[in-house]
Length: 310
Image 1 (cartoon, rainbow, N blue to C red):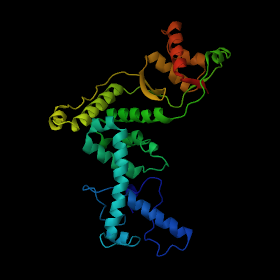
Image 2: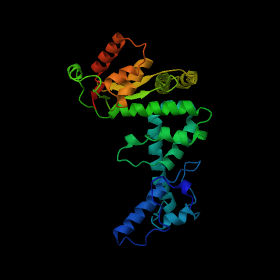
Image 3: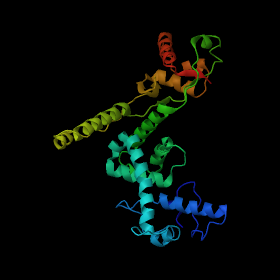
Image 4: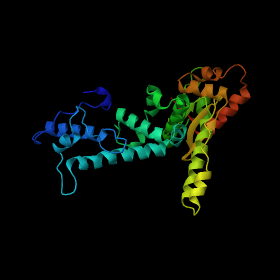
């Protein structure tokens, strides 16, 4: 059995389906077999693979635990579930990653998604976590995004940060009065769990916004009488070049925002997030930072509710 085609974290399936479900162990074996069958990557024609993991005909394996009916064979019935699983997850990944899809193109994106989900299948009760390991996967398999691997990874990280910003927890904010009661050398602050600090090396915020605006125009055009000409006129968004950018992806009043930061402000926030005391965090901003700047930044962060107790 080739481990490369087994989903990460799953035990190997039984060689055969149990002949009867007499015990809990029999049910577990059947569930494991069905899980691996559902997770088998689709063929190029979006169908169920004709061979099982050990090389046997998939039709023979399916017949061990699925009955045919007057319209569909066991293989065809299993194929329906296999397709439903993949189409649903691919659809979610399309919706959650418009920027990455624009970087690599639709066809390559579909191959990336199938390879990713084959290696890292959904293990959570919520589909919100489906793409959590996608940035890691892109670094593990750079050939899938070449020659734009660095940009693809930066965009994937940025798009996952949006998911985090949208529904991560909010902790009670710390007030200026509370900050004033503790000496800066001992005071340790934290950032809200929904905030992600990024130095992507590309203007990924502008790029993803442009992609979403283009896609919105295409959606509107598809409902128009001259939709074919309108869609044809919509140009591909140009991939961004290397650029020094510092970002905070966050939410405010239940809305998603991307905030550009000055580099010293980014360094201070990163130091706070790493658990460094306030005095050390401010020093991380550099010697050129003036007290008035720090005061202005902290006023903004406090107003946005970014700071909380560690």
